[in-house]
Image 1: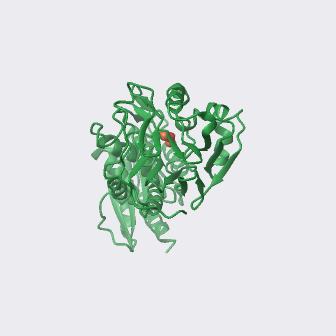
Image 2: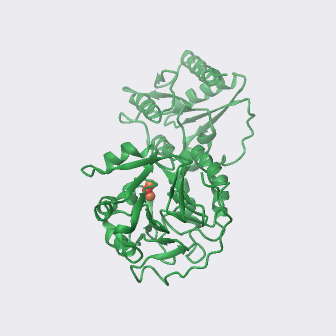
Image 3: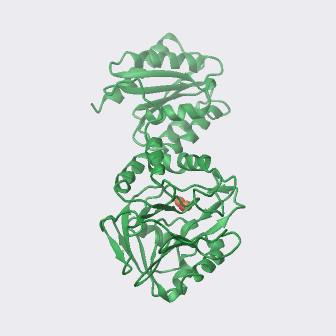
Length: 424
Ligand code: FEO
């Protein structure tokens, strides 16, 4: 990769307010923001709240031998994007188009851009190749896939690529402009915050949005966040230019620091490094599943090197349990069957596990039932769907557990705890 130069001092004129015009906004000597503002959006991707909308940030880089466009916008915002692009470049000048991430909010205007600039060469990550075909059905594009260490020359400007997958799709990458210390980071360091003042030292307080975005988009991929930070950290950084929210030109490194903090465990556990952690959650209508849980807990506590904990789901909100599960080796769910199903507190916790990485943890399910007992199987299926290993067949008891059945539950706890140690 091209060695980064010293961080430059930026002296550029910026438009007063991009919402008032459809002009591009200079963010560094050779880079313009040519994105679009979406202040009316209230929900993104069905699940994310967007209290004051979002932006789809796209950038144009001008070098002595051509122009590059980095990411586009959601298709319905194409007119705004093309107006801004046309205010600073002619289509025939565009030599390269780089897509750091193919999600439609960034690739939506690509087909029309390729039609207007057919000479431009498209650059995507290696993992983006399959997605490009699936997302842009009917549009066949020539492209080049790139990896860490690859770079493009625009004459006196260079674009270098960083392979940063799973932030938050497999295809994601970052692009770096070393001559001006600009990192085009894709969704990384972004947030859904729409403010036409554009720069982090001028917009309103977007801290809540930055944290919320991390929690919902990046948190399940903490491991990959740390890998990406290892690549980004050595770079000279004057500006981080993400695909959503403010352009981060004031203390950009603060955002690396915050990402690193957020990617560490929520708090330090008292559990030793040589111990495994097992969390046993239950909810009980008549005390029968609770009795099973206590017997399982007693059994798990007999196994040396396993720190078991027992929690009644009635006694807490979901968020603290999600934090605990993120750091645990094993999880067990005790659920009664009511009307052929598990119960809402169990499903609420399970549905929140998409926020964290649970692949490879071990899980098991148990519960008392009256006549049908579907809940245990349904929850087991959900655990398997989350790629949690389920080494034991679920333990079920009809109504009130007998002493013999409680002894079986205790053994179930022993077996689960031993399963956690089986890799040692
Ligand atoms: Fe902003 Fe993952 O697209």
